[in-house]
Amino acid sequence: MNRTETLHGLSQSPKVDVCVLGGGINGLSVFRELALQGVNVLLVEQADYCSGASAALSRMVHGGLRYLENGEFSLVKESLVERDRLLRNASHYVAPLPTTVPIFDTFSGLANGVVRFLGLTRRPSRRGAIAIKAGLGIYDFLTRKRALMPKHEFRSRRATLSKWPALNPSIRNSATYYDAWVSHPERIGIELLRDGLSAGPNAMALNYATVEASGSGYRLRDGLNGEVLPVQPRLIINATGGWIDIANGTLFADEAGPAPLMGGTKGSHLIIDNPALRDMLDGHMIYYENEDGRICILFPYLGKVLVGSTDIRVDDPGTVRCEADERDYILQSLAFVLPGIKIRPEEIVFQFAGVRPLPASKDSFTGRIPRDHFCTVLEGKNGGPPVLCMIGGKWTTFRSFGELAADMALDQLGVTRRVDTADRAIGGGRVFPKDPESWIRDLAASTGLSVARVAVLFERYGTEAEDIAGFIAAKPDHPLPHALYSARELQYLVRAEAVEHLDDLLLRRTTLAISGDLSLVMAEAALDLLAAEKGWSAERVAEERSRFLTLMGERHGVTEHTLSARNEHRSELCETTAKSG
Image 1: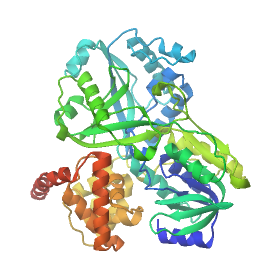
Image 2: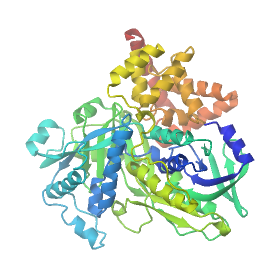
Image 3: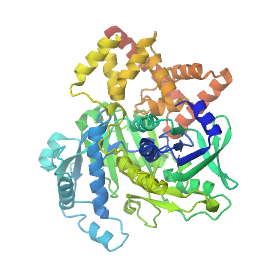
Image 4: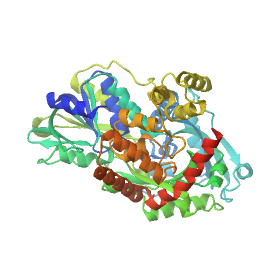
């Protein structure tokens, strides 16, 4: 991922077969698909990879139980197939998640499907036991041939409250079924990128860059140094998600642009550090309806608890953040389903918001907007290359959506597909060991690292831990203020994974920020390491520090004071780890 070499290559040869705009999960997916077919493909992302909606998902990998109510049976079937593929192809990050639905009614919700079928827009009533039973029956039927996880089961009120006594006592039943969750979604994006780049020199990618109209053609602008280069694609793929109409406005400058294609909604989530709440969940996700009928989720995530989300229409995806009224709504929903659990403000250790890239819709109820995906091809600017727009899409179906767009692109280019990705393992999911403990012991023995250290690396990177452990062991290393990270590990990420800003490293290449484990001293240690790698001046370091702290405060509700308060706690953990190690 050498940025200088990529820019130099484009300056020498600006012609590419396909230019993919957008480095979110769908853009990375189609980039990988095309690169594996030998296509000369360039990916351009205006910020960092997976820094928009692909960093703000609910961390669920699911079929979309509630989409059945919209009649989106084909989407649910496709999502379940892709969920099961991810369980096999990315088993280092994707795992089964028992999901329990508290049920408060028996017959409610039966008319929702009829309402949708008739084209009415009435807000649906809450789902009762019969409607939920029917939906879970369809879920089981659609996965009957694969049967990777158990079928659903119903519990009585007594059995439910016996297992989860903190649940709202007005429930009548509960149902448990299995979906999945993803621990490191941004890292899967990076693995897709690396998979594509490894296909050969015809694949190139740049973060912090844009493509815009220039006369009768296009030019690429490097957002880091301001360099401007011509780029001549035969086809453009607009995979910018919630930014798709904004990107089209740039591509079709000085022309009447296409009609709006997107109409996204904002979803916000909180990460809560409350051990009692985490332990009470007993490893389950609680998938519940708030009193207004809005679906909410609650499940253990990286030692904390993730809870969300909202569903609010937005016009500008670049300004979304979790607002105070959304935090209040999420906490109110939590108080409804678990009335005895009290959350203190300081227990909210992180918050995030993103835009669901939904098709344009006039539906007055956001929950009714279709969640399916499709592609639309627009005629190019002044007879130039066509623009293939990827509309909609959910995280779970990124592979199949990328495959669909790539097949359309290959048809445009007259190229035959030669590699199928349906059963292709992703990144650290490759050659995944049947006996991880033996694999970890062998790698520890060959590198000289401790078994505990290699186990942490395996949890973070899957089998790619082998390369990282080798890098760490190659030269002297030193610990960082966070007991479970070292300088050599972060150096590897900076050098190998296109890290350009501190937030790239702390929010997306690692889970330090979202897990609530980031302290100010750790952030500053990481900044010093990044600055040394980049050769930054003291002034540039100060600018980066200010940039990061502003972003953490404005977007994630984590202030400099909060990070500073974590210093003492992290120091205590480091001392404990050092004594035990």
